Image (cartoon, rainbow, N blue to C red):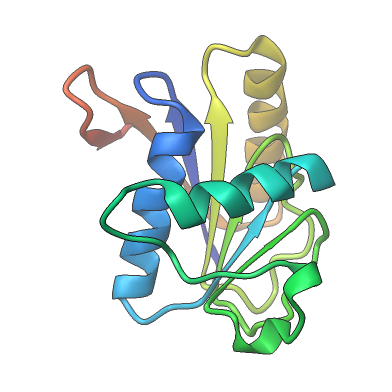
Length: 149
């Protein structure tokens, strides 16, 4: 059964949270797909994952890089899994869509954006309606993630 995790971003922006979660995914030996809401965001996330710290980068690729099967992390605006990922990150309102084949879906949304919160609620209902296990995580003021539901 696919586990779906909802991350309610309030204390830190996506640009700080996503790289840390992707790092943890790779450290566990998992492959990932990051699905953004648009091609423009794919480009921005591509740059972010190469430059988010001075000491490190996250190995990844996009469609324009070719050979998606060789990428440990694939960034896209489409509902695809060309690198055999077991984890799928959804950002910028990308819909959950097909969950078969994934062990974990991570839906990140901006808690300061009422439209994003409403979309997350709808996604939560849809996931629960098909019987998937869903958990809701919220960041505490000190930056730690706390399971709320």
